[in-house]
Image (cartoon, rainbow, N blue to C red; front, side):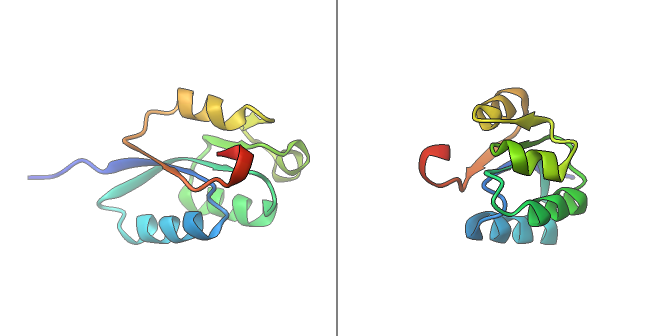
Amino acid sequence: MTSRRVKVLVLGSTGSIGTQALEVITANPDRFEVVGLAAGGGHPELFARQRAETGVSNVAVTDEGAAETIGDVAYRGPDAVIRLIEDTQADVVLNALVGRSA
């Protein structure tokens, strides 16, 4: 019997909790699937690497400048995370955002 993988949307993927969550998810590809990533934009290089490693195109960055640096960001700006959540079918939304972003 095969079980369905859990679809996970990771908010705050570049922070401590988000990066650790992605480590667990990628170490268990038979159990989990990343369906979206979101970050504030403070670490654009890390975010771009995470997107490449997960193969996810469904991404959000709240900082416009960082979104421009990263390129090809589906959702950008202050309401980017909300729109990402509304448009993404996920079994689990891991909210690791801090402060006002959360």
